Amino acid sequence: MAAVMGLIFWLGIIPFCIGLIPANFTEPDKRSPGFVLLAGYFVMWAIYGLFTIPAVLWVQYNNFRKASVWFMAAAILCAVCGILLWYRNHQKGNPGLVFGCKANDNSVSFAEKIRTMSWEERIEWLLFLVILGFQLYQAAVCTSFDGDDAYYVTESLIAQEAGVMYRILPYKGGSTGLDVRHALAVFPMWVAFVAVGSGLHATIVSHLVMPLLLIPLTYLLYFQIGKILFSDKRVSLPVFMIVMGLFQIFGNVSIYTNETFFLTRTWQGKSVAGSLVIPAFFWLFLLIYGGKKRDRRADMGLWILLVCVNMTAGICSSIAVFLVSILLALTAFVLMIVERDFKVLLKLGAACIPNLVYMGIYVVMAYSYLWR
Image (tube, rainbow, N blue to C red):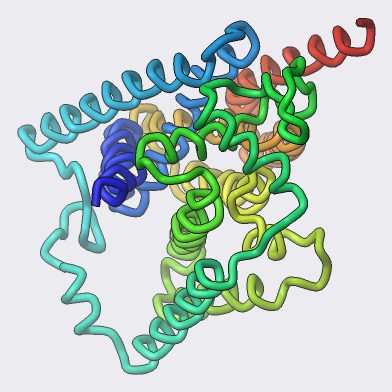
C-alpha cells in the first residue's frame, strides 16, 4: 500500500501540480488535464536534470542522495506554486482547468461527450482501448529483458542501494570514473528516484512501473497531437489513435525501430527520447504556430515547455540533444520563411540554449577523457 501511495504521489500528484505552472501562462482553452499532466512531466524531468547532472559531475560521494533531496524540495515547491497559480486563476474567475470543449463552455462534461458520440465513434474508441490494454498487458506479463539492462537497470539499482551515480562499474562492481557516453543521460537515475520514493526494487520499477506509465503517457501525447490535426473532424481522432496503436504493435520489423524500443525497452532513456520527447516537439510546434497569432503572455507557457522538452532530451540520451537541435534548426528555418519573420529564428535559437550548454559540457568531458 505504501508503494502504491508513493507511486501515485510522485508519478501523479506532483507532475500534475507542476504542470499547472506552464498552463497558467497558456491560453485558457489549452488547459486540459492531459495538457497539464504532459507539461508537468516535461517540467519535472527538466528540473531533475538541472539538479542531477551537476551532482554527477561535481559531487563524488552520495551524489544520488544529495541530488534526490534537492530535487524533492524543488519538485514539492513547484507543485505548491502550481496549486497557488491555479487558485489565483480560480479566484479571478479564469479557468485553471478546462474539461469542456471550450474555455468558456465548461458545461460540456466528459459524460456528455460520451453520450453524444455516434455508435461508430464509440466502437472506434473501444477498439483503441483494446489495443492499448493489449500492449499494457503484454508489457506487464511478458516483460522483455534486453542486454542493455546489465548497464541501465543495474545503474538504477546501484543508485538506489549505494546512493551514488555513475561511480561504480555496473559490470564488475568496482569503482570507476565518469563514463562520457552515459554520465549526462540521467534518466536511469530518475527511475532510481521513483524506486526510492515508492520503496520498490529498481528492477520492478524499470520493467513494470515504467511501461505502465510511459506507454499511456505516450498515447496521451498522440491524443493531444490528434486533437490539433483533426480539430474539425471529430470522427478522425479515434481512427488516428487506432492507426498509431497498430504501428506500435506491428513496427517490430527490426531491433532498431522506434516501435521495438517503445514496447520492449520502454524504461530506457533512448526509448523515451524517440517515443515521447521528439513527438513532443511537433506537438508544441502545432500549438505555437498551428493557429492564429496569440499574445505574448498566452504563448509564454508553450515556450517554457519547449525549453523543458529540450532539457528532457538531455536526461534521456546525449545523442538526442544533437538530434533535437537539428530538428529545431530546420524547423526554425522553414518557419522563418513561412512566417516571414526573422524573430522566429531568434526565439527557437534561444530555446536551444540548454542544448548548447549540454553539448559544451559533453565536448569538454570527451576532450578531457581523450587527453588523460
